Image (cartoon, rainbow, N blue to C red; front, side):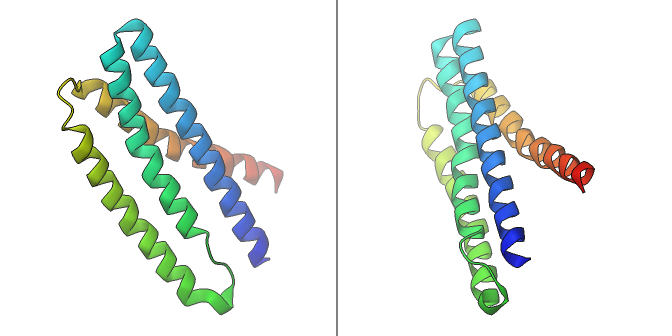
Amino acid sequence: MIISLIQEGKLLARKVLVSQSIVAVFISIFYTFFVGKTEGISAFYGGFICVFPNFIFAHLAFKYAGASQNKLVVRSFNKGSKLKFFFTIILFSIVFQWNELVIEPLMISYVVTMLAQWLTIIFFNRVKEKRD
């Protein structure tokens, strides 16, 4: 039972990361073709700033499983949350150093990619409920 819950969590995390990556790339391509190269790169950075910390978090959150490793699970989850926040701040700080940065595509891509996370979770939870 616990193993299946962990496997379900890992699968959902993988689906979220894939959907976020697809959304980020799509937004970047949209901006590149319809607005400009600099805007496309800015949008890509916004999506990357959202996806990369989520990848770190997902990796650490599902590193351990089982009641015997309860403390390790909690510690790993907390570490993942802190690192996600840290990497988000660091990546924004690095990207804001770029002189040609266009803020609107960066922020739009970041927010839409973040929304993709929640919409993916909602969608797959509804699909799961219909199966059960």
